[in-house]
Amino acid sequence: MSGDTDPLAIALFSEILMAGQLARNRLSRALPKGMELSHFSVLNHLAHTKRDRSPAQLAETFHVTRGAMTNTLSKLEQSGHIHIRPDWEDHRRKIVTISTAGRAALQSALAGMAPVLDDMVSGVGREGIRAALPVLRNIRARFEPE
Image 1: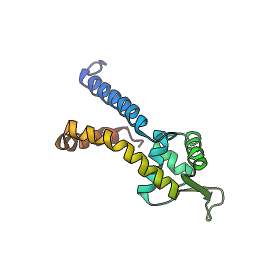
Image 2: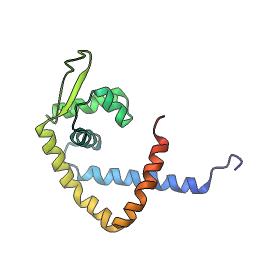
Image 3: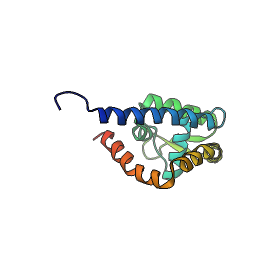
Image 4: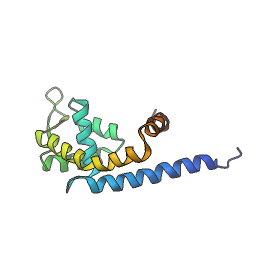
């Protein structure tokens, strides 16, 4: 191609961006009052990695600035969903852990999101989702920093 953007690529990314926006809006409305998608994402990550993380590691994982992650962590700490403590090995760093209240909030969020997710799976079909996942993961991997 001579500098022209492939219409197939434009159509693909238009669909990805629109689907992402619609999914964020719909899932945000399903979350418990006061919880944002960024809060859910951090709680979900901490619950599933089963290890403590530093704010800098979390910022890197979510591809956000340290300032943005600090803001999210401050809100989660104020709500009692996480604990932030000094790193006993490197006192310049802090360590983030999910609290019992955070695990309960995560379960509440998942319960609120379940009807939205169930509707998506039933509407698209399990096989359609299984077929789409490898393609979406490949696209995501191409955007990951090197």
